[in-house]
Amino acid sequence: VPNAMGVPTLGCEVELRVPDSDDEVPDGEVGEVVVRGERGVTLFAEYLDDPATTARSFRAGWFRTGDLAIRDADGQFFFAGRRNDVLKVAGENVSVVEVEAVLAEHPSVLEAAVVGEADEFRDEVPVGYVVQQPGRAALDVAELHAWCEQRLSKVKRPVRIEVVDELPRTSVGKIRKFMLKAPREGASA
Image (cartoon, rainbow, N blue to C red; front, side, top):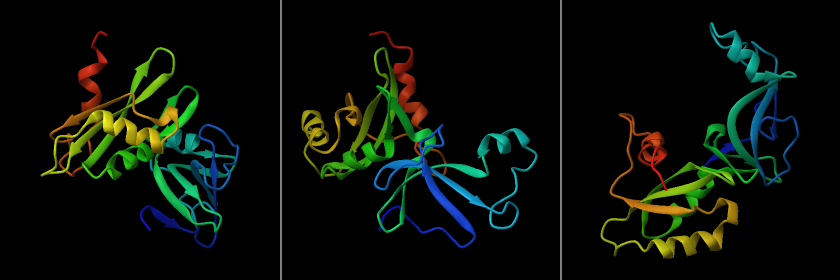
C-alpha cells in the first residue's frame, strides 16, 4: 500500500495529534505523528549538540516527529507528508501532499507540486504546478479545476494551476518548491 508506515514497534506508543496542540486526532484524519518510548532505549535521547531543537521536539514525554499521517481503524499508519508541507487555509490545515496526489491522479498529469501563496483573507491558498504526460493533448486547466472540485473540499482546491515543462529539482531529485513560489512573491496584482 503506498505510503503505508505500518504499526508501532514494541516499546513505543504512537499517536496522532493536532499540530501545535496536544489534542488527539481521530482515525481517518491527518495529524502529526508523536512517539513516546524510553529515551535512549526505544527512542533517541536527543539531537546531537542541539538542546534547543530537543526541547522543542519533546512535549510531555512525547516526541513530535514533524511527520503527518492518517491512522485507519486497524491501527495502521499512512504517511501524509511533513508538517512543513501543510498550509493554513482559512483556519484549516491543508496537506499539500493530498492536493498533489489528486492532481497527479489525472490521466494527463505526469507529476504535480503544490505550494502556498499568501492570501489577504485566507492566510494562504494552494497553487498547483503540473507537468503534462508525454504524448497527451494539451492539458486543459479548466478540466483540472473541475477534477479537483470533484475530489477536494473547497479549501483544498488550488486557486490556480499552472502547466510547466518540468518541476525544479535538487541534485538528489527533490522538488525545489521555493523556486515555484519565487516568481510571484514580489509580483503585484
